Length: 524
Image (tube, rainbow, N blue to C red; front, top):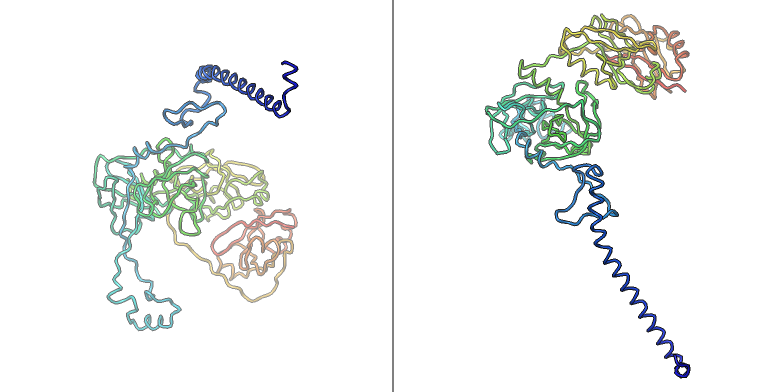
């Protein structure tokens, strides 16, 4: 630049010229970068298919990636989307085999009360004693019959349907509605209360049927689908996962339930539970709820149990089960320690029926049954189901834990028959002689001969008071002490000696009314 010209420039003008020069330089750099990115784009687009081809389909499990139709392939930096299972084809194929079951129930006999009045009402006694019609008696007492609804599924194209006993067990009329809205009157072929499985039949042919699966192959975490009629909404599908298998539910010792988190509500009972292969693996039967509605815990009867019961009901109208004549309970950590087991498993024998099959084979209270026919028993409910499925007259090979050793005992299976339950009443006679097994927290006294006869017991000691470990374990006054850790005790001295040598965990065998149970005590 000419020095004379440069010196003639004022400072503001110099600053303006400098800013213009910087702006021109930045614009040139921007054009260079834009050109480079334009040249690189075709190269990247060409490289993407090559990389995908090199990786192949093995890089991503089939059916688990979700991509919108017609969209551009996702770049390597974007996360891979994994789709939830699609049950639509399963519902389309097997949904027509699921039916709605509507029931008109038999009228229930009156319990002798006064409808519409509480027993605490001042007029309740007046109406009941003198037969005066109550507020809801007389002409208004003829209420319409109770109605119910559930679900079922067709297992035979000639019209045999599986459902729940609690759906049709008290039915006077049963109507089956198909998905095409055809309706058929149904006949109850048979119902089994122990498993809650029932079979009904409609007069129709060429019906769609379901495919039955193998529940022994299912695992927690697998997807399952339920189809039924919750609240009367027919052919409703709900999905979830298997939460657990071989669940024992209080009062149900013959069914190793499948636990799921599938939404099951009133009306779903008797409907099928499908696996992802479209096979029925269970019958939806129960829910666990504190409100009466679904709370995330539902139970299904394994289809192998239902199939066995259903086949017998169709063939003979009744179910034949095996029995070996023992009362059993679960083995918890304290009981396992008491009997020398490495971990809690098996079924603990708390009592043996006199002159029953197990008694003849040498099974005794305190034995822990670890397996049947080579099949391990983890929970006590599994033993009940395994033995019940055996044919009467066959031999059951039991793996038994006794005195710290495992041995095999063969038991001849007998037929299970309904028996009237006997109750042993026991009083509290006057007398002294109570002594305290202080380590256990028990105050006991000997039973008089007439007391033993009245209670129908082989025990000799009755609990008078409880405290400490016994109280914490829910031992009750009136319980009869039979033994400790598998050893019988007949006197206060034997009880005290057994308590001293028992260690920190004690399995106390007691008789409560007509039942014998082991109660685990943890000593301080």
